[in-house]
Image (cartoon, rainbow, N blue to C red):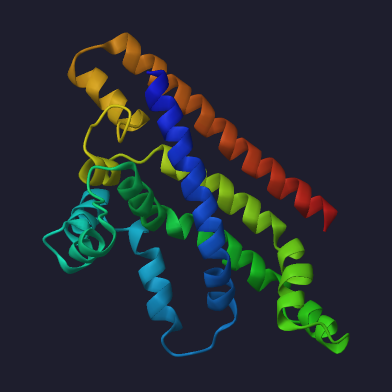
Length: 220
């Protein structure tokens, strides 16, 4: 039980960190780009919101398989096999939780408007300086919301992690899979403990996000 909890926290924490790193520039691009294909990229980012997790997990499993081009490339050049590994879970989790991090950050960037960036430009701040010293601090609520949502969503994953990782104790058996195992084995007490813990932690994370948004609203 403890092993599954620690593995889940590790997966959610690492996934959230990666999503913040890759989601921030992507959200900035979506908020400010005016090219015709921007909405195609936006639709691809949002796809996990409507795509069944098992479908996404199935195609990711196929893509990672050594029998396909991407998986074969990793195997031949780096001797890396992703299916049924923790690394594979991280990749799947990043893709599956991407819209839950990108969308709040994008909304925060759009809410800033152009005026603060234009003022910084008149003070001869470089584009990178404007992004780091103006955009990021003003968009902080979006980053906090995105981090909370990304972490919570990763903790609650089931279909994607089951398809990609299977059920390997200590490697891919996260909380949602452990709960399924306990229910399947009619171990109701263990299932109640894990499910109740996830319910309380999920409520706490959402409540924290609401408090962050309300506090930031008062400051503005």
